[in-house]
Image (tube, rainbow, N blue to C red):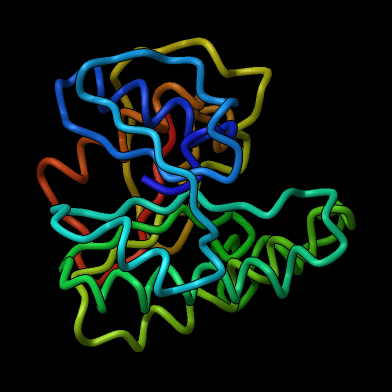
Length: 213
């Protein structure tokens, strides 16, 4: 798993370990992972280099990428594209068949032909990262060799809802899943549940999906 020390990645890591999966956490800063678990291996690696990725993911069943260069990183657009592409190519080079990429909600369609990122009021600070994820979705949709899945979180998936794990959610594909109040919301803990469920029982191979309450 790549990006296991991040906001979303750390919750996915914990969910997978709780389900007794063997996980290799590939991170830039291993000291950020404080979990000690017999099924966890921590590996330091530069995911901008596909040869490094290939070496670290070899002999694994699935690669999960929660890679994010950092929302405040002025180079987030280029680094997300370059890093995620290196992850994809490294995964193929290693002979791993399945790749799940955590993208963004910005590319979800909130109306016919209108994506969330293009709607009025979309935060300017998030546009470079959201644009990168949107553009990479187009790239991965052309991928023929891997059994890929692209996950777009709920529109409201943030720290305010970090702790609640209900194990319940609904899924969609290219449009947000809204609750009865017209909100697309999911805790990061339940986001991890949705991703772990897809890894165990794939329903969205060669597709994008989203999840919310």
